[in-house]
Amino acid sequence: MKSMEQIVVYGATGYTGRQVVQELRRRGYTPILAGRDERALVTMAAEIGKEALVRVAQVDHPQSLYALVADSAAIINCAGPFGLTAEPLVAAAITAGVHYIDISAAEQRTIQTLLERFDASARQAGVVVLPTMGFYGALGDMLAHLVGSSLAPLDDLTIAYAVDGWLFNPSGWRTLERIGKERLVYRDGSVIPRTGPSQFSSFSFPAPIGTIPVMEGYPLGETVTLPRHLPTRQINALMATSTIDAITTQPKAATSQERAQSSFTIAVHAVAGQQKRYGFARGVDIFGITAPIAVEAALRLIAHGFSRAGALAPSEAFEPASFLNTLQGWDFSYETSVHPDTLFS
Image (cartoon, rainbow, N blue to C red; front, side):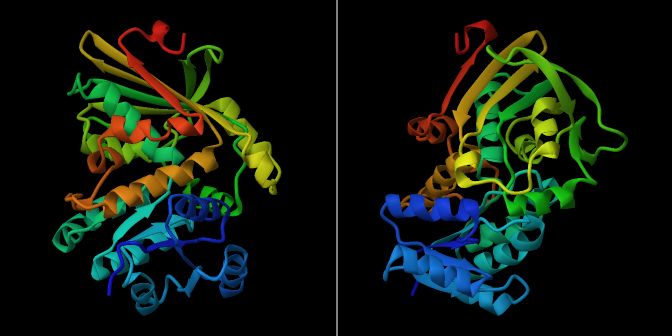
């Protein structure tokens, strides 16, 4: 029998998975701790207490994945690389009639596959498949929708990130190795592979950052999700070169305290003819804010009265302003305006 109280966290023993578990418990839910390493899961369950449930499932064993989710309401996948885990878990979730959420970020091809390949079957099953519901993906998708929807269709949409103190976790390094050879861009109404060497330019962030060098064509999940709900001719996905330089020189190991020191600024520019709109968001701890994003999404999906179904982008699943406003208690803020100089002034 399916329980509307039970939410599975796959990859529960990972760095972000632990924070998702903690946030679910803070919200009054006892998650099912799931993953591939039984010993680590049992150890984590002992730390939580006798109410914790443990389930071991391998992504190459479909029957174990179905058994994992069959009596739950939703699964939050925190186990990267998502190119290895997402499709098997989505298939099991749809078969079981369970909502699927993940926190994928730069794995553009995987995000595209989930949205395109599983939409029809998710609709038929009456469930939602919701990738990229973390810091990267959800915040940019929703901020861009708020900025650009009143002007759409757009001629140009720019989304730019500047992240300070971004320290990878182990799965992040594995993901970086997988995605380094391919980047997708959105040009003239199509998502296409970007070829050739990286290009660089400059971009003006709000003070105190100012105008800084950026890499063009950074592999953001928003490149894939935004065209589904925000008509635009092209999307420019930018990342501060200072962020990229720090990634390539950081140590392979970092403490939880060190990872929690990250901070970020997201900027969005939307252009339609002579009209322009701007939006900026700021916050701290990119891993820490991912937990309330993913958990809020899961709780909204299983709430009485939620009726949408299919493979959805963040802004297709939820009204962006309502969702972003739930994050203000996490040192997160955002603003939109037709006058960029007034934002965060």
